[in-house]
Length: 422
Image (cartoon, rainbow, N blue to C red):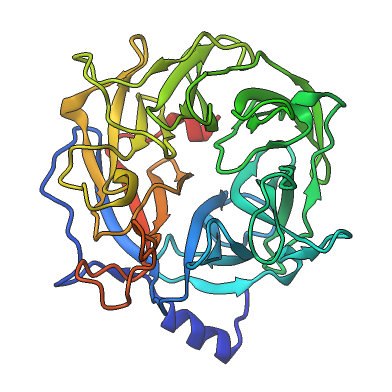
């Protein structure tokens, strides 16, 4: 068993996961035949200047090297956002729980995953990071992309996205330096990033990695899926599938992929609506269609992320949407919902919808999903403390009660997820 110093034990006590108490947001009474939802916090606190964003986690299995316990190790990453800017991020930080979220260590700043100076006077940092266990190499591999700043602002003419990755050492409790994914020459690879995307690892260890990219001559971004190979140290490009495009505002972005049954499914962000498509090989996809409920009405999700929860007995989508008494939330990005998907029709079953995280005025649209074990899947999200302008910064004493909580919404399955045994 790992020996912790007295200082670290004190830190763990200070970072004990807090349950939702009186005066805090409460989940409405809801019933699902498939799961129960348990809401807790990993940490909270807000100074009105910066806030935690992009909280996502990966789980290291019980039998993995460096795991002496009989519980999964869950490692969360997140980073600070400058509230007076637009997507101005700082170094990645890491948190960890060895007891299924009863206590959390951290957050600890990963200085090597902070900003690096560029030769032209700018700075670059990795962002939109998502850790996930890579079973073939027995490695916790996190992938995101880079963002460039000049005078602490994004210059869109210079901001070249690059998919970047790092690995986690569970014994030392640190992340490696980030490396960049090398891609072939070509306009579709000039600015390509895997930011905030959910990947899918094939049984042979190959990685299906969705990316969104913008050709130099275009104003809109397109999406495709890369097949990559990872040996525990280096992520290598192998091939890519067809290009998915839409001539609407900024195009497609932040795609996420999963597999259920014989099909691979891809969900995509667009300014006006969320889209979905499917593929037999995970690379070549049908023309996307808008997400709807089963009665054909629009799902109401737009201009933000959606991600998958995949169980052996069912496929689910996690999303935000209009029509939830949430017009005061920027882009209707809260509450956070989960709904069961009809995989044949690629629609959400309206009666299955449950709330994962209630809203307190702050957006919840940037989140992550982690399969912890066969009995638990977690959805992790921070309260993003920016609102509509002209005053973009939510005050510390805002009337909704948001305090940049980092929520862990546990989906407790009533039947074991047999996919975790494969």
